[in-house]
Image 1 (cartoon, helix red, strand yellow):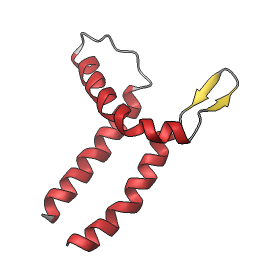
Image 2 (cartoon, one colour):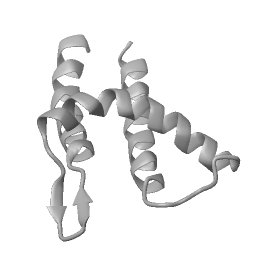
Image 3 (spheres, helix red, strand yellow):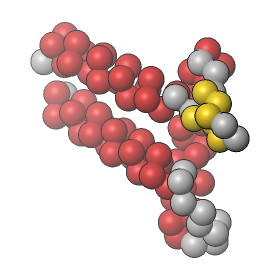
Image 4 (cartoon, rainbow, N blue to C red):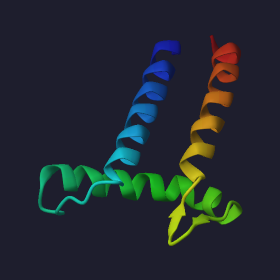
Length: 88
């Protein structure tokens, strides 16, 4: 059970970082990387929408900085060790 939880945490963390990096790159939707980006967009938009509604986008000139992935990373990294202590 502990190894499955650790594997899920690693998969979630790595895919989140991949999604963040892919959000900076313009890739056609027909490209295989574009298809991966679309799948990750659908998955993480559901998770990040409550965080985005609570934390507004920070405006820096004409650009906007979305802080919701940072909040998600901090939240998961805060909760994960506590869950591991309870289960394992």
